[in-house]
Image (spheres, helix red, strand yellow):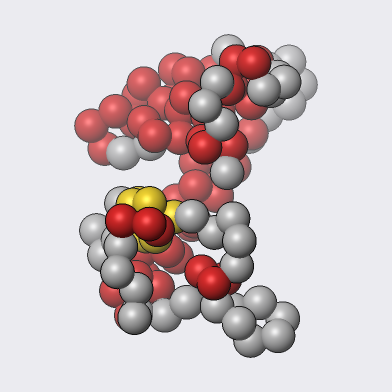
Length: 109
């Protein structure tokens, strides 16, 4: 949802949060080192260690799970059994290749 903010610099995010927003789209094979460079100035600083590893791991799990769901044609459900895609604010569809597309651009069954 943070990526949908039109002007992240004016949205009140901390410098570390902005660095994370800049790094997430870079977390793919051809730009992974750029993503790590973006994170290094804000995470794993001082006595805090392992933060970058946690970010990369969590993002990988997120992408992998959404990719698997896309391939299977499965959806996340809320506590009442309704698909999250039917709820307001759920504006992204994960494609079979792991990419994302605006929900308004995809014909859903």
